[in-house]
Image (tube, rainbow, N blue to C red; front, side, top):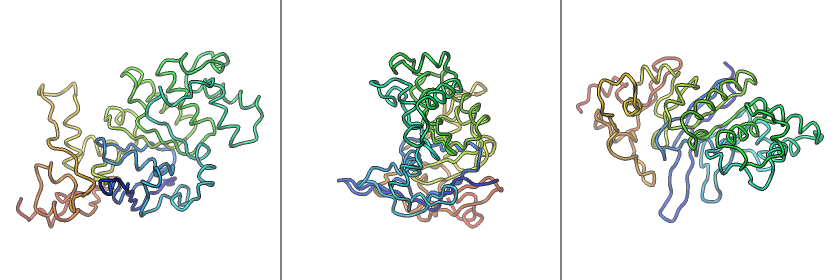
Length: 329
């Protein structure tokens, strides 16, 4: 399949009064054209920093991409100027942020906000921009779009605002859509509707999607492939079935075991004991060592190499390395 995005050895640091936070530490990822890649993990694992790096939205000067490349359709975005990135954002790559309640300007009508990006990035007339906005509202399931264009965000429910945000992200027909926790502020019923909307839009437009989330239920609904992130690193990637039915990293297994399921034989969930690593001074070895029930001495000292379990399934864990299996726990 054709790769639309390739991230190679990405490192992102933040300088603070307390020291340097190594938020992303050597991330390698790719996204195929027309697929949905979900990046999952606990808060603080580096998911949002990775997605913001693609858009060059890392706050400067405290944040900085210190190493690595992000190639979008062959172009390295890390080396792209701010002026070039302004032309790319919204047109080639769009992003949906977490909270629909704060993503819209309360002083502007929905129509003005929908057409703003279209008028900025093209020479389209006001009439054509309005027609396109109506089409996008209809695409995302907003009824009576002609009259809705004149309304303000406070006149819409949370779920409808999120649909409007999605319409804004798609109005310039981007090739890549990044959705950062797009359903966090919504109730469960609306979450399901928004996820179904993502699938419908992808079927109609062919847009490639990166979905950043900690909700494995959302991942199971829409993702084609899954990347599990922990301690600033991608520790396991695979097709959705690989991750949900054949997980290999203890952290991935722990995540799945901590999710409530209707077929659970026991009433008590199995939480992952401990806390994520300190990224001011990240561990030399596997970042999950301190919380892993299967940790070996080598885990603490050396980060494991990537083990290729299949063409689609990779994991970074010493348990998959034949040399480490002979070492005592």
